[in-house]
Image (cartoon, rainbow, N blue to C red; front, side, top):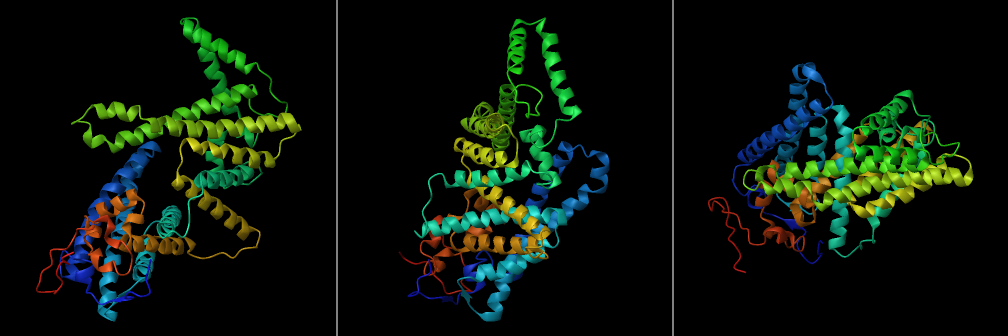
Length: 450
């Protein structure tokens, strides 16, 4: 926190404070640009290649679009990192000093110009991501100053409210955007918003008949098929549009989402330990059977199962089906996040709901349309994150701090935060013993004795 009794202006040079590895501003910018460019190629190269395979885009995509999209995104990230340090140096040369909100003021134009390079369809996603990160960062900064206290299960409550609003509109006609509606149908079941299509029915029927066919050759499968038939023959309310009994409908969705959640978390764990596999093969086993796999699986299973189950219960109790069921069921189902607490998921969900409500307000003529809102949100959010990275990196999300170090070749860690301690208490907390190896021809600073 800024102390009013301490200096509000710093007269150190950009070399002494920022790019301590070289006294040359030009070389500093080029060094950062090179590091960011190489990492951006790795990040976006892997991302777009895998995304192309998953979406089965075929050879035409890799021939016509892959390199162009890769180059555009790489240029965006490189420009973002380079412009920030360039603006840092330009400010010092123009004004001769730094003051507390400098990082925010320098970050806004740097981030805005860089995002304008990126493809339009990605700008909104980036803005939402950095908005999420900025809110979490501000919360961490306020909490470190003792200005706020964590609400027990606050992230779960936030997620539950967001889920309630989302699932309320899920059950309304034209309530959700087409892309979101399609995803929700796959997760929660198309029957909660409209009658099941022939494709869904045929898939379920094929699944059951396959089980019956194989049951003749396997006793276990025969028992399983009998259990399925028993569950499917249970009662179903006349307003329920799912094909089989309500109990079967709930269990089917829960088990499916448990498997998906378990696999997703297992794959993430495997990817994070891939460099250790050859040295320690047992890391594969620990990644596959990690408890967090169960936690994510339980969260998704509970979320979908409770939502489906409560909708069925409310239809039985009220003998009607309306969008308010989605509101109630969504809020209660959201508490399944107790199995897998995540402030990132909660804040992101809340931001997406706010975005959806904003556009609904525009459609109704109650809210103004803001041009370039994605660029504005990204610029402000990222500049807040950069501010924290400069003055109090210990309050950043650890994964994002490590990302900044990786893309800048560890340059963010080489700032002389000892000089910033009078501004922000414990600014050098993340590396209290670091002092740059200055070229004494360009500075008179010496390492403090204590």
